[in-house]
Amino acid sequence: MLGHLDTEEIETLLRTSVVGRIGCTFESKVYVVPVTYVYEDGYVIGHTIHGLKIDILRKNPECCFEVDEMSNISNWKSVIAWGTFEELSGAEAERASEKLHAKLAPLIPSETSYVSRMGPISDTRTATQTNNPIVYRINLREKTGRYEKQ
Image (cartoon, rainbow, N blue to C red):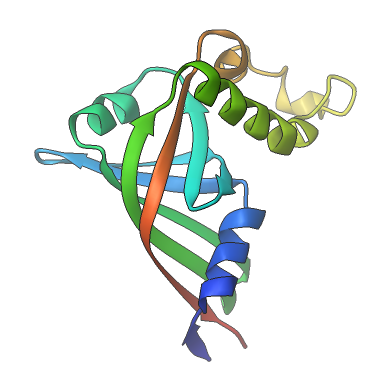
């Protein structure tokens, strides 16, 4: 059965997930990239280092955000939302970083829990925690959700 998520189901999926995708566009280039995030009070909060995503969002801050939860091919939920990107600085960026750290830090593997066959923890992956990250938020204005349940 296919259906639409109600407002509370949309908000719950956004709040409980930690990985979503930002879709952004400038001129003829469309770019979709996965990000870790925190959702609070209508805002997606994230951090990154400078790259193509930031270049595009600085030129065109209007973007799309998608998150999904998939049990299997016939049981899933998905939210798509549209909003506006903005970079944070100062105390606002510090508060946002604290929220990100509180939610994401427990999910980062420690040296002793990391599976050795997967290789060492990447120095570049931790760059957003140590090398002057860009902290941002996306003000979500419009949200829609769908599901399939068997």
